[in-house]
Length: 123
Image (cartoon, rainbow, N blue to C red; front, side, top):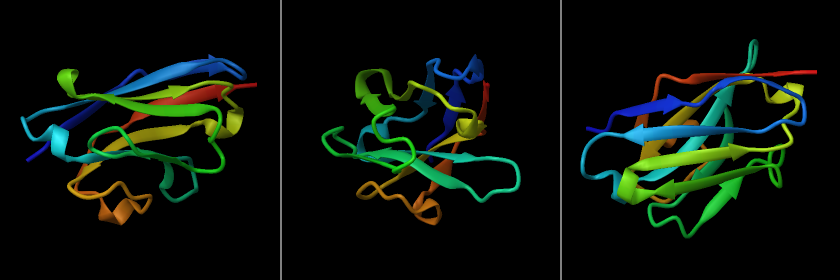
């Protein structure tokens, strides 16, 4: 059992930055790959970024590559999503997810999900 709690969402202006955090419970966090997904009104949940359990491998959606950075601090059992150069189209509820396998961009393959945190980017 892994419990995930996201934080750090909020309202920012276009071009601004925001860092999301996802804190995991349990002592098996280090064995899980982690991902960030987002869901905007009227859209399906969309892959944003993923990171392997070791932190050595990362992947990003084309829409955020070069602007967002995923990282993890296993000592703090936390995964981060640093979001820079934010755009209005980044507005969504952002979800943290965990899977005991190689990081994947497919939401259905993740086993555990956080409650989500709202990110709103104004123009």
